[in-house]
Amino acid sequence: MPHATTPPLTPNTIRLGVNIDHVATLRNARGGAYPDPVALAKLAIQAGADGITAHLREDRRHIRDADMHRLRAEISAPLNMEMAATPEMHAIALTLAPHACCLVPEKREELTTEGGLNVADHLNTLTPFVQSLLQKGIRVSLFIDPCPAHVFAAAKTGAPVVELHTGAYVEAFYHAHEKESFKKLKRLQEAAKQAHDLGLEVHAGHGLTFDTVGAVARIPEMREFNIGHFLISHALTDGLPTTIRTMKRCITEGQSSHDS
Image (tube, rainbow, N blue to C red; front, side):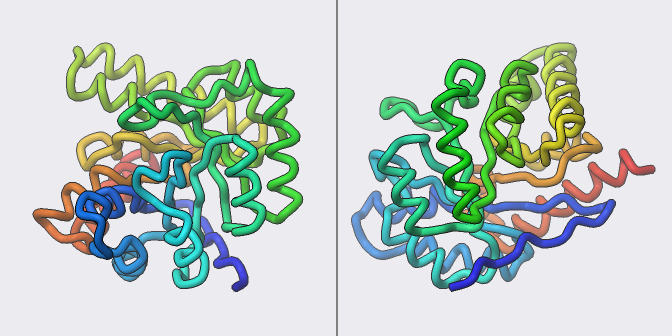
């Protein structure tokens, strides 16, 4: 099927990609067919999600190959495939041809992605990997820590997008002194500006909540968030459509406070 196109940006719009990995986590806990990640993806789009993100891990702990093929065939919004930069995932991505691929680090023992991709030390390996995906017409982003060296290296690969890891900021917001939270936020602000100045589109994600997304949305270079675990968890009480609409409102209010 043809690619769904990325929704256009206006001066007051930040796209929201909804990560459905943990719908599959819940399904896999009993080994059955429900909840169905594809059905929840469609519901998320109906509620206002601008795209769907799914991480096909090497260990297949949540999203499976069949899920990716169904998402590619059935959803009406852009599909963003998170993946490790491995030969296996490279071959799958080239066959699947999703709208976008986000390259992330991956360790089998981790509970979730623990940090950004070390682009600076693996530039020679990542550059041809990125270029081959781009040649297939796939938008490529690199999930990185907000570090000047990695932002610069990401631009060198030719990838058009970076996704800044917001986990350290969220952790500081909830568990550290306000000064430390401000310090982590400032790193995100500086990395976003550097990336934008290098010609990169700036996305962000990891751990973001209703409480924390607004400050990141105030960063003027920000263009897209990819959020999953919090949205799926909160949906257990409020339902997915209400949760997505609330998150989009928090994003809009955060950006509006910057614009004003």
